Amino acid sequence: MSAPDPGDARPSGLRNPPAAVRGAGAGALAAMALILLMGIVPLVRLDAPAAAVVVIAVLAALAIVLCGLLKRDWAWYAAIAIPVTLLASSFLHVALGVLGVLFALLWAYMLHVRRSVLR
Image (cartoon, rainbow, N blue to C red; front, side, top):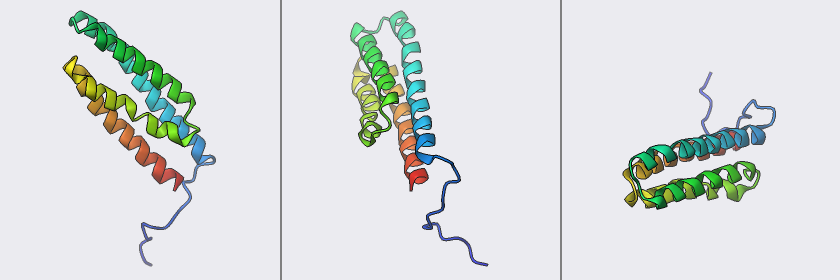
């Protein structure tokens, strides 16, 4: 008996793989939005610039909007704007850069899961 070829396209075993992947992506985006909103109070306490709070609020709103748009392919790649913007805003406060790195890793994993399940 030979080992299965890793290139074989096996069904995922899910009843509705696209819906399952959208649910996982929406969960990740909702978690990002929640974490961003919870980060507002510590930034205010640490006397971060008001621009940092505005960036966080806008990105949290964007994450919530993208949760509902994951049926479209472009929304998966538009969500990359969240960690990229956080990384670009790290000059406002170092915590934004740390969140940007963590969210980039999370979203890269979500794109990997999407690609492997929908293959």
